[in-house]
Image (cartoon, helix red, strand yellow):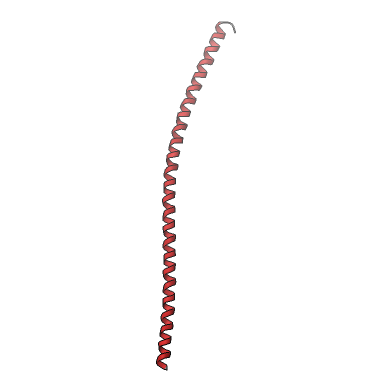
Length: 93
């Protein structure tokens, strides 16, 4: 009888150890899924950053062109105003 009780206790310990092993494997797999999810998210963030950097470069280039156009329009307005003043001064306006 003592041998059977000892064998039963050994099976119980084995069953508990297998249960702990299963839990450890489940935690490890869950951790790997989390890591994989984080890696995917990091990849998407990198793609978004690249796209946003390109959009920013485009916006900065457009802003530069608009500033140049603004300066040109301002220059032309000043020239037109000076021409108008000259005409008015010449014709007694």
